[in-house]
Length: 163
Image (cartoon, rainbow, N blue to C red; front, side, top):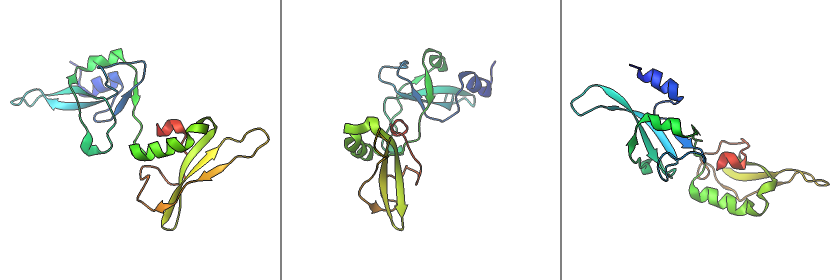
């Protein structure tokens, strides 16, 4: 019989980590995320088993986790998946950025959180175009630590990283 460690290694997953199912895979209708947890086999048992839990969306806060049905780990053989990115922005923050960059998103090189003193702001850098220099757009300033808390200061994120 395989141990928990053997099974986790076989499926290339870690306990309690969030994984995203890539578009080519469907685990359960609408399920986009999953995690693997250890659970007691029954209320009277001390034996533990590995269980796969799925979720269809990425919640705004940790209080909103709503895991759906539990499934057997063998489902992982039928789908492609990767470690889910750490959530960097709330839905409203992300929507604000995307509304601003939508007309020229193909020109975006990076998005970064900058700061000085007790103020922070979002900076958007563009790829230089032929005959033009690189442009940097700074958005409105906000009080330090109040918005875009998931973004690391001075780190340059691509649009894909923030999706």
